[in-house]
Amino acid sequence: MLSSKKLQSDYPITFVSGNTTLHLSRPPSVEAQQALEQLIKKRKTNKLTRASAPLASGPTPLFAKVQPLDTFKAKVRVTLGKPQRNGRFDWPLEELVNTREAQRRGVSMPALEGYGYTRDRLGLTREYFILTHLLDKHIDGMQWLRRNPDQVETFILNAFELLSSLSRKNITHMDFWAGNIMVPETSQKPLKAIDFENCFAERTPHSSATLGFQLGFFYHREIYKLITEADYDHLVGEYIQALPGLSREQFDEAYHPSKHEHVGRKQRREVFLSGRLITG
Image (cartoon, rainbow, N blue to C red; front, side, top):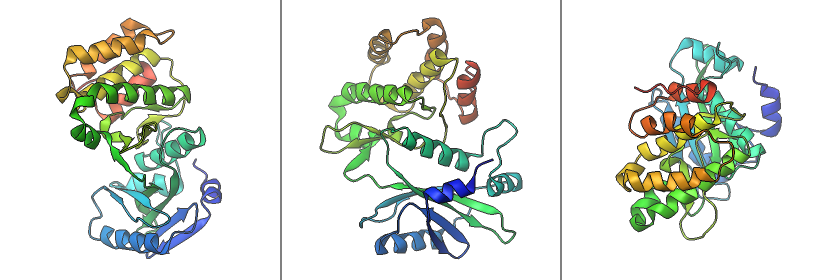
């Protein structure tokens, strides 16, 4: 069970608006308070849609991600902080736990500034909020590539280094693609990873297959439009050549199909847990 007391001790500032309660790491600025209130007000008419948006540009700029819960069982589990039968939490809590742990391990990422929830009339969680620091002078990888179409290989190599840095901290990101990478607009500072909803903060006995999936998925999500498959394979080959203990057979079994076929969120977990890639 997820300890709400431990979470609230790390995020001791409480912000309440209507049926929504947010737990923050520090007091929000006036601009942030107004932006949060506006977001909460908008959610009353958009209860069934996910939302991601920057909130304020004041002293405490925030980025909010809101996820509705669409089943009664999910609402009960999230309200009580209980996992599903498979031991994993529902996606909103999974993201909170993973983001918090990634930050604790020093991953290159925007800071987790808080979390929260909106309750329905029964007192059950209707939707969940994840609040992170809004990265100043950063754009996501897809925006950066559109601005710098001649630097695709540089971006790919830097993304591989980010993936390695996550791996060194035992964080396995199963939704690793250009849109979940933040790039400094003007400086040469390292890339940052975002969106830890579908990730694991533990080692896998199937690291070769998992890496094969990650690199295939990275190509499948938009990168294939910007580089030939042969050139991408060459970059991947050079990258994995330096990795100790990699099974090329297990890597290839996941890598080649995941470059061309859709792999759903739950199927990605299966790669990490069993080494089996289920597509479609």
